[in-house]
Length: 140
Image (cartoon, rainbow, N blue to C red; front, side):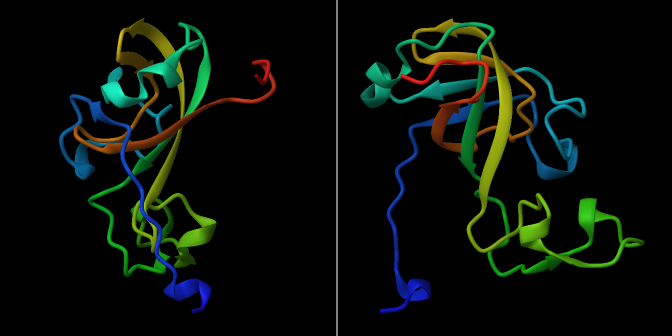
C-alpha cells in the first residue's frame, strides 16, 4: 500500500462558534477582519485544556469541511487576474486534505469554551487540534 492509499482517522475535539456562516463572508486570513469567535471543546478533552490562559497565542488546526478535495490549483486569493498556483503554495481551503491552520489569541477561558481573536473559520467548523505558538510560551 502506497502513501496515497493509506487512510487515517481523525476525531474532532471541538467546533467553532462564529458569526461567520458561509465561505463568502469569511475573510481570507484571521487578521483581515475576522470577528471574535468561540471554540467549544468536547468534554472528553477537558484535561487537555489545562494551562491555557487569556493572552496566549495558539495554533488551531481545523477540518475545512466545505473545502473541495479535488482541487490542486487555484488563483491565489480567488483573484482570477493572478496566475494559477498549486494549492500547496497557497492557503486555499480547497485542497486534498482541507486542514486549516489559524493563529489566534485567547481572549477568555470559560470551562470548555475558548473565546479567541483572529479565527476566520466559519460557524460549525470542526477543530482537530490546538497547540501553543512556540517562541513566547514555554514548552511543557
